[in-house]
Length: 121
Image 1 (cartoon, rainbow, N blue to C red):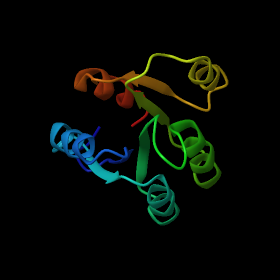
Image 2: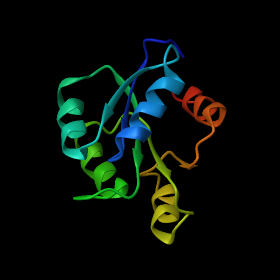
Image 3: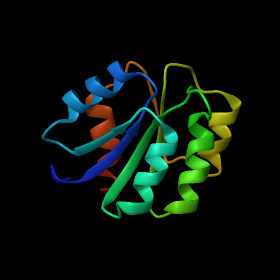
Image 4: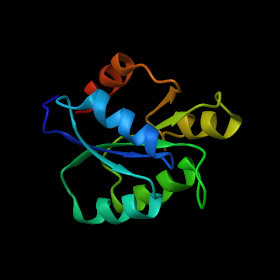
């Protein structure tokens, strides 16, 4: 883990994006997006992204739908779900079939996210 490792965080709530950026400042280069579509566009042009974390419940598409589309762009990096909801059947299935590399519960624990990401970057 180097502070210039780039990760993407997608959440439709601006306050969550700000909080995430502040908490991981100096640990990762965090690119935040309120729009999953904008995050997908960034993935296409930013090969230095090392991991993606996304909220589950968002308008237009949920986190699992976003990950499915993101994997079509870059299937070599880890994808994580961050949700205020418990583990659903759908999320468990995504973890089992490894379309998701991990799951974090809101409110998130910074140390847990760093530990999980350190397995990949």
